[in-house]
Length: 314
Length: 314
Image 1 (tube, chains in turn purple, yellow):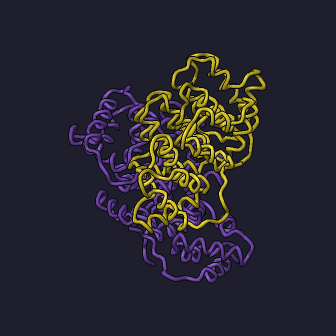
Image 2 (image 1 turned 90 degrees about the vertical axis):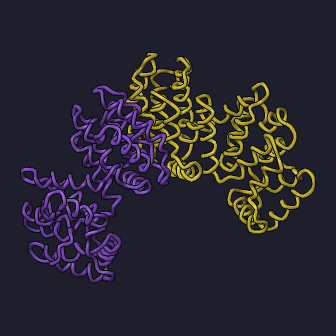
């Protein structure tokens, strides 16, 4: 379930006018910006952007960028983009930042549905005049490249059929590959990049049944090169992406100085989807409310905005 | 340009009734079937199928399969399927027939546009409850697998921009890989599976400018394992698919006993697209009309049907 609280009806024109008013004078009225944009769903935000463009012949996103700054600006900017376009931007930034951020690409490739991932790839074409897989491949090599290109290129079958015999066979293949440091990664890559998620979850369960440890935990024992890290992220995202996101939030919050990029990414991309479930997982795991943890580690308008998306009532 | 001759208006109901009449009695009236279906475009055929289903509570394609047989049946069956569904069937049959037919998969992946290829992948899900890349990967290994999974997973950028510096760099990479028998295929695979077709053609041109031979000709000198064959087909399909199809037709016709599957595949899949251009290339290359060559090597209803799709007037 979502955390976003949005009214069932709103006037895009009135919202656009209120935003224009908030931009007037020296320094924007950030509170007004948050009160509006922090309470509108994706469709409503696109309508506001359109109304604003028609009223003032100006792109609302560009105007926002010039009015606000820092983490607040970055979070609002991402919130205002259409989801597929936002993921295209997130992927591109991650690729440009080198291997340490490739988990963002893995997230997008493994958490989204087939059609959602295709929408991101279309948005990537429009924005960067290249394909997502092109940039991924040009910035990686070896097994890491094979895995990532396979993941972003996947268009998985989404039926609920499970082949239990296949799950057994492929759990064995995963076991054989993972138990040695230098395993047969070709087969691991094939399985992870082409099987349906339902089938993969069955395979991961089979693995756990036989080896009394989950494959993702087993992988943590391995050398933590970039390939293994990506593999680990892919398995976690496919197996249970909400649990995965809970951990991203946990790490972002406990990090010295707080990882605002990670925090914003999860909250902005999941607020309209399943952030409520992720919040519950967070509470279960940490015995602290996610809102309270976030409030402690952030400040100013950024804090207000993020807490609004988290569903905090004023 | 297309070769198919279809009326601008037709009555799906009348066509369905005429087909039902043609099925009556012992042995179908093949001439009537060809006169109707051989002169209807993809949209009209789907309308006839729908009208037939409504009138007789029976799938027209299934009925056709029971009424006719042999090469004629196979060609009509493929002709009646929606293009994306037909390509899904062609790919599946090719995969099941082992490595010697993988060029059919390469054709589909490299000749179709990005959105067309996605439509085939969707049709593959619907029909086989698995993904195309899943079946490709499970039936291949090594570089061949990497290349094919990359090709079917590609969603290439389709803008007309060309990066000439990149074309030069990557022509060099291709040269280095191809000149040795055991080259750096990883980079070749990366380039062929991720760059836009426009960019790739520029790269192939650069290669020819520098080495006075086209890269596809150069590849013919190599060991002709399955990987190199697939590579060769991919380059030819991306570089000039009409020229490629002309050669498929030429080989199908000159083969002892004629390769009806190859012949039907090209004629059925291109009749509504660019078969006229392919016919012209055939005439230029062989100094024989394609219709005459086909007429000489085929017979019966199959011959009549194929010649009808080739635009032969009664």
